[in-house]
Image 1 (cartoon, rainbow over the protein chains, first blue to last red):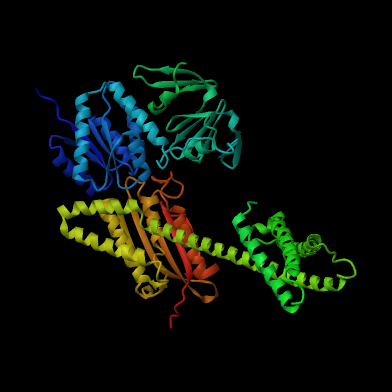
Image 2: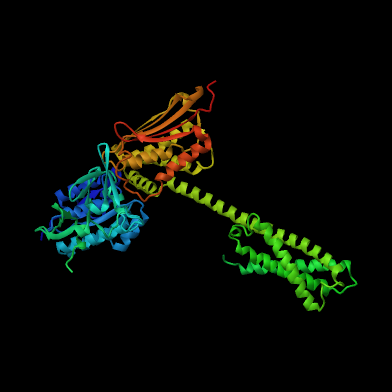
Amino acid sequence: MNTPPVRALIAEDEPLLAMALQQELARAWPALQIAATVGDGLSAVRQALVLQPEVLFFDIRMPGQSGLDAAVELADAWPADMPFPALVFVTAYDQYAVQAFEAQAVDYLLKPVQAARLQKTVQKLQQALAAKAPAATALETTMAQLRHLLAAPGIPAPAAGSPATPLTLIQASSGSQIHMVPVAEVLYFEAADKYVRVLTAEREFLIRTPLKELTEQLDTSVFWQIHRSTLVRASAITTVTRDEAGKLHLALTGRPERLAVSRLYAHLFKAM
Amino acid sequence: MKIDWLDKLQRLLQTLAFCLAVSGIQYAFRPDKPYYIPATYSLAIGTLTWALVDFGRHLFASSEEYGWPKGIAGFALPLVGIVLGYLGGTLLADWWCGVSSWDSAGRAQLRISIGITVVAGTVICYYFYVNGKSAWMQARMTEVHSQATEAQLKLLETQLEPHMLFNTLANLRMLIGTDPVRAQDMLDRMIAYLRATLSASRSTQHPLADEFQRLADYLELMAVRMGPRLAYTLDLPEALREVPVPPLLLQPLVENAIRHGLEPQVEGGHITVQARTQAGPKGRMLLVLQVSDTGAGLNSAPPIAPTAPGTSFGLTQVRERLATLHGEAGKFELAAHAPRGTSATITFPLTTSPA
C-alpha cells in the first residue's frame, strides 16, 4: 500500500522561526514534507492554492494579511471537490486568540514551539488525516470555526454589533465637490484597493473610510457583510443563486451586477 | 445618597460623649445643682442638633464629595441646626424634668444655656467638617496614587510588549542550536534592552548617545527577527552625543515605525533615526530628532493587531513628556514621508550652551 506523502505549508514572517518550526517538525513527523515556506499572508493563500497541501501552519501576525484572514480567503477560493487542509495557527502571544482557539477546538501552537506540545499537534493531525472526513464537511467545520474566531474579542476582525448612532450620510468627495449621499440610498459598499466604492441605484462614489470602520458605524441588521470586501443592504437582495462550484451569488434590485458571497457568510442564506 | 449607618452611629456616640463632657464642666461650676439636670438638657439639645445637621447635610448634593455642603449652605446648615436643636431640645428636657425654662425663674439660666449651646454646637460641627474633609482627601490621595501606579504599569506593559518578548525568545531558542555566537549577541542586546526599559522610569535624563545605543539594541533585535525586511540607519553627529534627553524618548517612535510601517508591509522597509540642529526663533538652537520609515504610511489600512495596547498610548507618552520638559517650545509632528512611509519629528530647544 502506497499512500502519497503528507505535505505541509508553513506561513511565518520571521525566517528563523520558520526554520525552527521546520526543524521541530522534521523531528516530530519525519514523513511530513514541507511543500513550501512563505513569509506573508498573501503568498500563503497563493501558494496553498497552487500546492494544495494537506496541512497548513499559519502565523497569526503576518505582513500582507493576518493568518486568520488568509485562512478565510483560502477557504473561499478552495476547490469544492478537494478536502480542506488541516489548519494549525501559530502565535507568540495573543491571549485572546488563544482563548478563542481553545473555545473553538482549533489547533494552535505557541512560539517558541516546544517539542512535547508539537508532538500532540502532530498526533491530532495524523488522526484527522486518517479519518478522512468528506471534503464538504471538513470545509464546513473550518468555516464555522473561522466564523467564531473572527467574532471573538481581541481577534483582528470586523466588529459586529450596532452602533449607538448609525451613520446616516456618506460624504464622498469628487474633485472639488463633496457629495452628500444618504445611507438610505446606498445599495452596497465594496472595498477596492485603498478606497471603498459606495453604490446607489444610479451612481457610484469613492470614499477613503476603510470598510472596517464603516461596518462599525452602520446598522448591521440593515447592511450585511457577505464578503470581506462587501457590505450589502439586505432588503435590496432579490435572489441568491448557487453555482456549480457551490458558491453563492446575490442579485440586487436596481443594480445589474451580481455579488459573490464568501463561504464565511454563506450561512446567512438558508431557505426557511 | 446612600447613608452609612456605622458612620452615623460613630458620630452619635461622639456627640453624646461631647454632651456629657459639656454637662460635666457645667456641674463642676455649679456643684450645688444635681448633675442630671445639665446632663439632660445637654443630651437633648446635642442629640437633636446632631440629628438635624448630620441628616440635613444629605439634602445638599454638594456634600456628596467630602461630607459637607459647599458655600452658604455650609454655614446655614449648622446655624439652623443649632437654633432648632436648642429650642426643640430645651422643650424636650423641660418636659422630662417637669419645669419650664421660659418662665421668669429659668430666665437667668436661659442666657447661659444659649451660650453653651452655640459654642458647643459650633465646635462639634467644625470637628465633623474637618473630619469629613480629611477623610475625603485621604480617599483622593489613594485614588491618585493608584492611578499613577496604573499608568506606570501600562507604560511598562507597552515597552515590554509580550508579543515582542516571546517572538524574540523564540528566535533566541532557534539560534542557540544553530548559531551560538549570534545567539549570545542577541541575548546581550536583549539584556541591554530590558535593563534600559526597566530603569527608564528611574532616571530623568541621559546623553543622546545612550539613547541611540538603546535604539541600536532594539533595532538589532528586530533585524534578527525580520531578516532582510528591516534595514536601518542611525545618524548621530559627534557634537550632539552628550546632549541630555529623557530616556527612551525615541523608543515608542521606532516601535511605531516597525509596527505600523514595516510589519504590515510584505517587502518591509528602511528606518532612519537622525539627530540634527536647526536655527530657531530668537537665535536659539533647536534639537531635531527624526524617525522616518519607508513603511505603509499614515493613510494605509489599520495595523495587523489593532487590539494590542500601545499605539496612541506611545504617542501620548511622547507628547506628555515633551510638554512637561519644554512646554510650548517642545514640538512633536507626525507627517507623511516622501516618497512613502511616515516621519515623526521631535523638536525642542538645545539647553547645553555651545561655549
